Image (cartoon, rainbow, N blue to C red):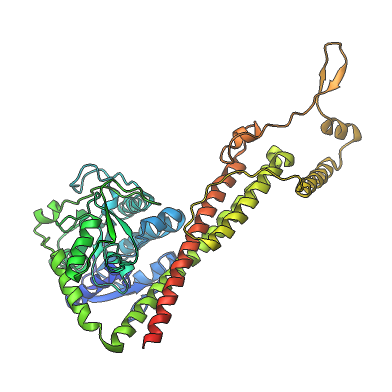
Length: 510
């Protein structure tokens, strides 16, 4: 379908309440475009509320807006969150992106998808647009799958890969760079900081400026632009190096930060060591790839912030930022809570299915141990959210016969229901133990040997001595994922509590 043309180009910016989306929205408005920004949980200040996972609503919205261009900034951009909740990351980064790209093509709108340098493994930098992606973590995989899905349904789509971003934030945790200002200023907390992995922090307004150049070429110059592009600032830093720059601009000491010279072991999602993006294609096509100087920006922003940090106006700003951060944490907590519930419900459902496959008597102890460990982990989380848990099988005590007795009753009940309608001979033949011929020729029932329970809970093959069916394996996986999600829930609750205390303290200072 041909591109829509009008006197004042209209652009839709998804994720316009986020770090990058706000900057893109601002650059295009100041550049004379008719900009329609969308958001979901933080839809305010004239932004349209749109759930990108509601495909019917998205199709209707795109059709009604009749825009010349859609810039898709919305994404699950947090690698650790994507690693914990794969389904949610795929829904937003792949499925929603694919549907939006299809809707854009049907409406005659050009489409730009924002991707990441994390599609590369960081072993052979710098990376050109035609280098083969090899993401190390689920976030990178989801963004690359989004690229592939978009190109399949909209071959003329544009993909712009960018690295780690920074800029003006509503709260420092919006950016993996800006959050380091909090680390630098928190003298009471000892912190280890990576000085190995290389980053190329890029300002969000520089990204917005490059996107506007692409938009100008499409909507004003009426030229064809499609395919993959890379944009990145050229200054490289480690996380420790970023802390040094921020500390210098802030006049702070960083003796509480310990420099780590070995590759970090990430707690959840792995990061590439050096995923530098080459801007060669942009330069060849005469786009301006200049960028702000990292150290100078920090000097300017900290100096500007110092002027604002006077009187009640500064307190009100901080209160507002804390409220926004709390809203994000509540959203994250709700998503984790829903994920945890689904995982644990699935685990116990599959345990019930496994009961019919391997027999209640063999499954009884396994169910008991899983429930005991779940209770122990939940109780421990309430005491210390930071504890790392190891699943170890607990042997039942002598005073635990009730669960076995209950299982026996359940087994007898199941056997009665199964035998209902069968003849007495058929029932006796099924329930009696197998008979073998002794050396003397007399028949005697075979004794059923109890499987020796060897090995940890993670190895049910050794435990039962039989081939464990798929439902039990699935239950194990869901149970472990559920317990990991509980730990994440406790961490989010702790952070939310810290923000509440900070908010209360600021309120009292007014």
